[in-house]
Structures are given as C-alpha cells and as structure tokens.
Length: 271
Length: 74
Image 1 (cartoon, each protein chain N blue to C red):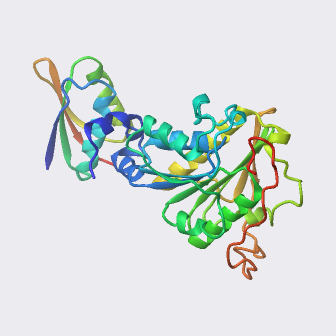
Image 2 (image 1 turned 135 degrees about the vertical axis):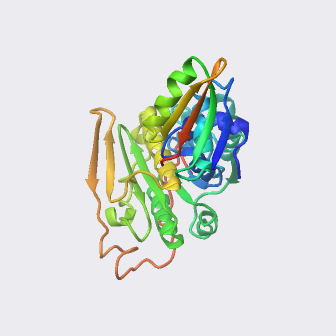
C-alpha cells in the first residue's frame, strides 16, 4: 500500500509525527475498530477515528436517534431524529473521510452474536451506556483476545480504562459484576454534562490509535477518573486479580451470558 | 545509495511530510538529496530534519533554490 497524493496531504499532521510517519498512517488505514454504542462516547470516538484515517470503522447500535440525544451525541444532527443511529453515524463518517469504510451492525450487543462481530476487528471501543453491555463486551473481548477501551460517564464524572485481555486488569478485576437493581441510574434520570462525553470519548479514540500504532503507554493497569466540576484527573491502580471470575486462575465465567436487561423505559432510553 | 526528491514549489509543512515519507523508504545510513525553495523551506526544513534526528551533510545554493544532502540516521 502506498499513500496517494491526497492522502499525504490529508494525513500530513499525522505523518509528520515521529511516532506515526508514513508507515504508521498506512497501519491506521489498514486497521479495523469497532465502536459499540453510538451515543455520547461513540460520537467523538467515531469522528476522530474516521478523521485519523482508521480504514474500517464498525458501528454497532440498535437504537434510533432521539431529540434528547442531541445535547451530547454530536455525530447525530437535528435532521437525523428518528433515523437509525448506525445510518446517521455512517453518513457523517463518510462525509468526514471517504477513506473510512463503515460496517454497520444495526443490532444490540447480545451474548449470542457479539463474539462473531468483534473478532473481525483489531480494537473495540465500549461506548455503551449500561452495565450489562459493559460486562458483555469485557467478556467477549477476553474470549476473543481483542484489546478494548472501557469508559463510562454520568453527571459530571467519567472513567476510562484500556484492557489487553489476559495481560492487564479486566473490567471484572475492578468491578465483579453489574450493581444490583437500579443502582446504575441511566443518564435520562441522573443527567450528564454533554461535553463530558466529548472528553472521555476522545480519550477512548486516543487509546485506540495508540494501541493500533503500538506507541506510548496504554491506560492499562489503572482506571482514569475525571471530574468535570473539579478538573481532577486521577489514576486509580487496577491490578489483575487472581480470583477474577473471568480472567483469574479459576474462572467461573467460561461463556458469554446476558447480564440482564436494561430496564429504563424513558423516552430516549433503550427500551 | 542516494535517492533524490524535487520539492521545489512544495510549501511548508507539506515538504517536510514528503521528506519524511521519502526518508522512510531509504535505508538508515543512506543519503537523500532534496531540492527545496528559498525562503520558508530553506529556513525551516533543515532545522526540522535535524530535530527529527536526521543529519544534514551539505547545503548548496543553486539558481533560486537549494540542494540539501540528508543522511538517514533514524
């Protein structure tokens, strides 16, 4: 593969970086990233990965665009309300960069199908908004050996961690399982500062690019927390647990299970 | 081995991008000869290349442009 004249210009600010160069850019163009969830986190992640020249971007979301999404889900525009999220996101990605091939998966993340989907990718971005999906992605990426970026946001707080399955702490090493009942109130009830998703989703895209290029140090082995109110970024150490139910020495989770349904039925939520 | 690259008429910073791409294609220790314009390019390019760890062996002024010999170090 060699870069066209147009690509040299388009990606010049990447290529000029010592850690990227022409070889790195070609690597990005031949890389495949799956974004699960095209909401607040997935929007900036998808746009930046497309702009950076990631050659294949997978989009997985079974939702439609709702008016209440637009305050933070910047890949969707007012005219897209009512459209499938994958279709809306696809058109913006293609508009940003025709080099990015988009593969649409207009489905919810489910135990019976997610492994077949994620094994087609080099990196996964967990941009979902609920605990069952987050554990499902963690487990699926572990079984398939695909590195991924976990993130979550609520109100003014965000958190982020990158997982290299089998090598670094997984989501279950940090949190054993979903919180009981309604402990995890969806953002429709708790609220979320829109720009928070831009900060954290962009950090996820950064991790994806670093991982694909093999540069720098990934956010593994610690959970980064961010408070928009105090502007504090904290790294909380997260070690692999020998007794982790998934990646520990004596695992009890040996296949994928759906951790339960998302119960919120407010407008703009899942179901 | 010496490779050549004519970057006359190519503005900053695109000329640096092109040099970077060309340098990636020559072996470490080999020489790349580039032709660049007077003005911004001759002021910026040698400095940028030096900063990136490459070695400028020779700069010669031609009629209205410059010829730069760069050895790939990294």
